[in-house]
Image 1 (tube, rainbow, N blue to C red):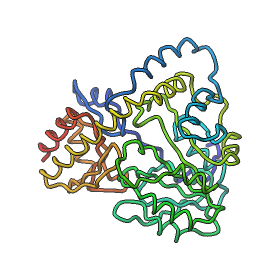
Image 2 (cartoon, one colour):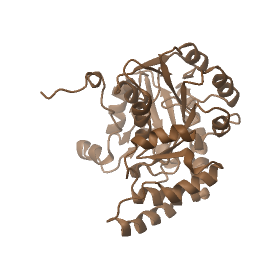
Image 3 (cartoon, rainbow, N blue to C red):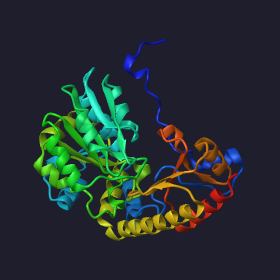
Image 4 (tube, rainbow, N blue to C red):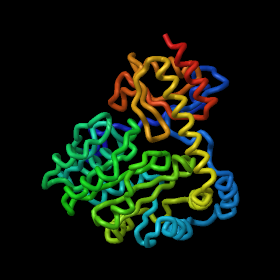
Length: 360
């Protein structure tokens, strides 16, 4: 066998939610609802659809590697300089770039025990070590993370809201945490689900970016904007850090349709509001149904919910799939006895809870 880097050996491939068509074929079902991957159940902005169709006129041309129009739009939206942005083929690519930029063999990074798996993949693929801090009430314990910092620590990854638990920390907690972090340690705040939050004390990370040069903010168009299939995300940071990412960024990593759709999506505030309002309404309905079933759950600030079902999560996954509902079992996420369910439309959730009530 051809030799390969030894640090790859312990890594495991990311397992996405089962595709709808595959489940239909396997189980002979006509209707299947996917509530496994935290996708926007409303689709995407109609304006983004129009932009994608128009973008196909440029299918023969390489994309604008600078994402010039989208860069200018986001810089204006956030009131920042354009050189503080870097774009990726989904935030996954930017997370992977972070490992390539900062991690040498033997370096350490810190995250929570239960969070997005790609942080560890980014670090460990470069020969680094991921240190997992204990959690508090299913959320990040920022004090525990501070206590885990050593002279080997290079990057701290924090998802807020956290995936898969949907928990958040506050602005004050974030400010106090950043005051304790050494300036030579990079802190990444991954806010993929931030647009769904209605927490009054959710952090103003843009403010912290101005105060601390060792902070980065990761954002995505996959969630509330509904552009998951087009793969586009971005990060905001200090210009000197962004320059390091640009040195490794592939030259044409964001497609023309993705750039055009993202530009249209970010301008469609009505669609974003509708998505957020729908999510809040459905979340309240889900809480009510879980309470009626006597099932515990983790209050969420994202577009998914972790519910404790008091049985094998993989069996529940299989039983629900046979009824036409694809969810995520908690076991692979480190939360056996729980299932993670994307908050779909009200109609989808009514069907899901009907199926859940029929489980043995």
